[in-house]
Image 1 (cartoon, rainbow, N blue to C red):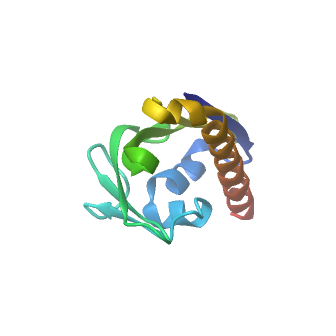
Image 2 (image 1 turned 90 degrees about the vertical axis):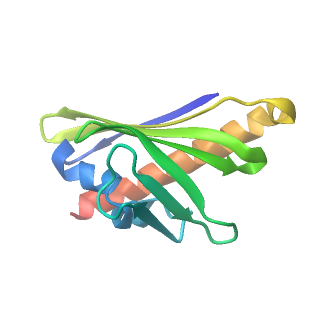
Length: 142
């Protein structure tokens, strides 16, 4: 199952990239988490583990599996409901002083989760839309 949300941001990719690659900035627009922690500390790079501290659950770990600074970042996480594995990616494309950002969540449903696809898709679409709106407001504010 793949869910995508595309948005246009009024900033160049270089200004948007820190919002994707710096854990403290991620926490400002992906508000489902209390905080993000990179291991090793610093901006996300290939092989970095991003620890996502959730309000009511044990921390979730996501591994950076693809990164092209200023262009693409992909994280693979396991441990969501039913030990589901999700790849969350952010792809940037500059268009003058604007940036097109594609937020993409991809998972392979199996077992009983197949029967919940419609609900899972709906929740994922709502999350990506919400995150995109949060990010748009932060980028616009500078």
